[in-house]
Length: 321
Ligand code: UT7
Image 1 (cartoon, rainbow, N blue to C red):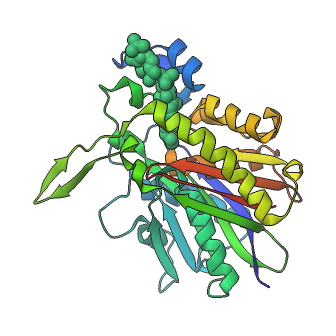
Image 2 (tube, helix red, strand yellow):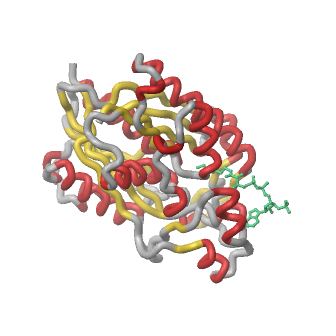
């Protein structure tokens, strides 16, 4: 049987941290006290105007390839999870592939599952590798959410940031990704969305992120609690055997509620939301890379990653490092 193991991780956050007080100074009608109390967010990063998701992704990808001890030419599958692609087409994945100098490579495509996109990407890559069709995948989450924020809507613009994270997932005889679970419920599409499009050379509809925060909050807590249990059950391992939970980084209160539902102490939960805000599809691979580079997550440990996002989409993966 062919398994898929994580061989390397990388991430990139553009520019200097932008604090809550910096947002106030830029004219957002908010306060550090409100943002930290309601969300746990203290800072986030924003890409310079004109910097694209593929540019952030490329830096994270190079770092992941380097940490795996591989060359770009060893990669035969590139999956980019993003809701803020460079273009309508071609895919951001093909731009990353080109940036890495891969010519005549394997498959490259984008996945659109918003904040759960990286989990979807990992599940897809694992199946490609387990089937024997591909040997070494680059799975990336990359976002420039600053481009879709309405700076006059304080209930959303303070929550998000830009960034990219990547992993190299490769074929192995030893288990790595042991279980995945993916879900969606399109009936909830309107509680978190960017309900606009481009047609006839014009923006049609609303090009900014809109959210019913409380509805999203309730949905996220239940979905994340349930799906983490689901992957431990599929893998047939006890919940207590999980060394680290790496959840989507949207709000510390959602993360704390999820940990409580799982009976996991917070010292087993990776949190970066305070420093990075919500970077959507990038949040899980960035948090994973931070924990690996900080020496928290290491070989021999069991990790659950889980995400929830617009669509609604949600999912998890149980991974032995
Ligand atoms: O990737 C998934 C993406 N999204 C999420 O995970 C978000 C999930 N939801 C949440 O995290 C929370 O619902 C929020 C942090 C977005 C909001 O927290 P809340 O406790 O649900 O606040 P609320 O929307 O009920 O607003 C409470 C008050 C309102 O004022 P009034 O009507 O009580 O006078 C808002 O106008 O807070 C006000 N408010 C703000 N005040 C200062 C909303 N945003 C802000 C702000 N600064 N940035």
